[in-house]
Image 1 (cartoon, rainbow, N blue to C red):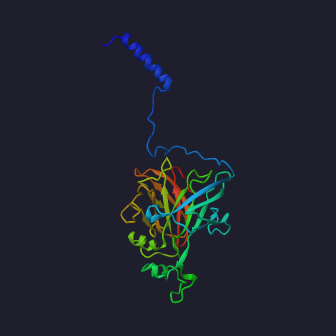
Image 2: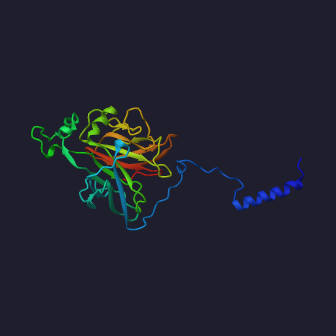
Image 3: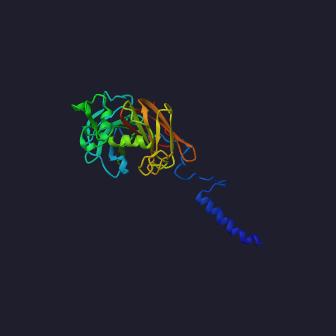
Length: 300
């Protein structure tokens, strides 16, 4: 047995270290990992000023956002203004795929959305190949024998980018907006066995963020309505398929064929723990995008 006089200095030293390091008598394990903040109260950011500068990079979804999309125009809209009848800002155009604009951030920040449209071309253009007639079919007013403005289709589907969490300060780095080529919509629908695209319905894509605000893998989404009409879709390495049931490293997943109107989406991680919920609205022939962060509550 070690003499007690030899243990004395050791205990004194350990006690001193504990005092210096502020080690509690009954220490508890500290949660770690990308979901360590789940179940903890999330702070409500306070706007730093009355407005904030936001930058968004538009990129091609099918190239895993390695290709920027140009030739875009955008409008800034308040969340309650579902048709953007009274835009807060107009004539926003991209510079090399980068959209820059200012949003108002009173009280709780800006939780509206950005409406983005691309250049258009006639669906009768031979360059569209076999997809041309399919795209023409999405516009009932199009007369393919005498093509006019009614036959024009956007190169990329009209997009609505919903800001969640609300913008409270200048973006430290540009947000990513993965746009979907119009010619890819029939292919996506076929890959997901969603049937023919419905021009009266829209599509919804969500990017899951973890506690470090990084895209999160292993997240699944559920929708609060029309579950029998929508088709879940989780691209795997940017390739759409009907077998993936959760997000890959991009954090992206969503639903095809969402009937127009407000929709609420809840996300769960791989351990089936609820991350949070968000809301956005679907619009005909439009792709809505938003982010789901831990502890997020759906906005009305």
